[in-house]
Length: 336
Image 1 (cartoon, rainbow, N blue to C red):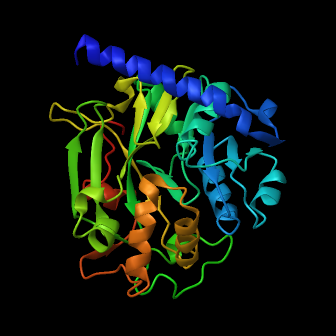
Image 2: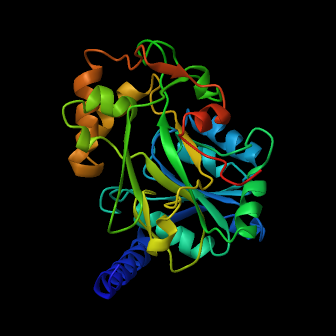
């Protein structure tokens, strides 16, 4: 990358940091328990709205992995999410009624919180329907992964988003609060993915899976991006640019090997497609707070009202992380 391009990225990073500083005024403290954060804690950052039914399993899942503290922004929930989170001893909670869209889909809020509270910590930024898996996650806590990353002088860790879905209509089996969502949404696409490199930021851009197949078959270039960099050893000068798809400084995006080897990587099992999704999709279509004037949700509604079944004859039932490694959707690299 040339000197001019590098300079422009530095200016852009400064701009996102300034935006985050300004947007901090939109956040109102509800429960501030950050004093209990230990120096070696892995932290989870997330924004949410009306996700009360998902929260019990989400918190349990990441607690079981060994996450030390949750820093969460509630964007005007009216379903009890705020009250539930306020009562959790390991959750620090902020609330805002301001526009999710004008905060760059929550990125500005989380850039501020990671800058203020994440310094020197491994920070995992996920949505409440995203469940991080990594090599040996069935036998090793997340601290084992971050210790290995520290020892290897690796500052960021990539993960591919894997959309999970049930067999049959997605609203056929009701999801219960506290239930493992993958008891219902246990299928995924084992292929049907495209990968290209973003020359500006250096990150990979991955598309495909059931959303491309079912909702964007005639416009695959508009399908949602599946590349994520959710786990980062945070420093104050860092900033997410577009969700967790890409970061600045640019070097944090190089979570893959260009020289024929394999870097360790993980996956985010995406439990979006449960029975609650049809109602959620209609709500978000009305709110118009998502990317590109909510074009994703327009596509979802157009298809799901006629055929809410994402399963096909090429669908594969999820077993464990080793299955995803065999399929090339994640890698243990040289971590043994």
